[in-house]
Length: 221
Image (tube, rainbow, N blue to C red):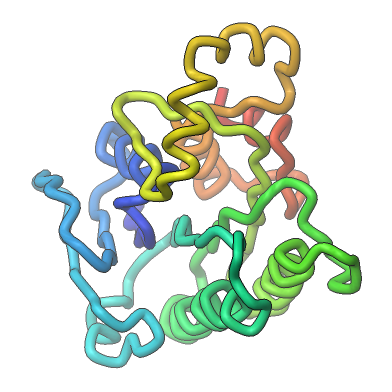
């Protein structure tokens, strides 16, 4: 299986890339990043792209892939809705529309968030925008599209968030992760769970298009 990964330098993307590199049935990985990850592997090719809103310079490189794992995302904290919409909906659809045209047999897997608003009409801004993005992805002519809504994520194997506030949260909560997993086993996924779940869903599909945290844990077990 040949896969494209967006966001390999983010916390979730780091976990997904690790599982792709370890999986014997993954033959080629095309990682598209804004800054080099420092990763080197025989089956990994990395493209550094400054403008994710214009994929035309690399379009010839984007054909012949079976799956795309889209893990890019930004925090909505302090951000106007128009800007968040641009960096979430517009950016995701730029990539997805190009890939649907170039790879109609592709499975597209998008990392969304718990409590995303599928109605697009709720009071929470980020949830509305994420819901709009999810709905638009499901309408594209992919072989299949799946939406991952992880809850609390435990970073493993050195995965680190690029967002300072999240790094502080993870540093504070790391000692109590075992307790959190014991108390909320269906709501705490690891970066390893998410990576393995993406691979398994790309390989075999899943009975739901929207995977909540408990579904991700199940699919990644």
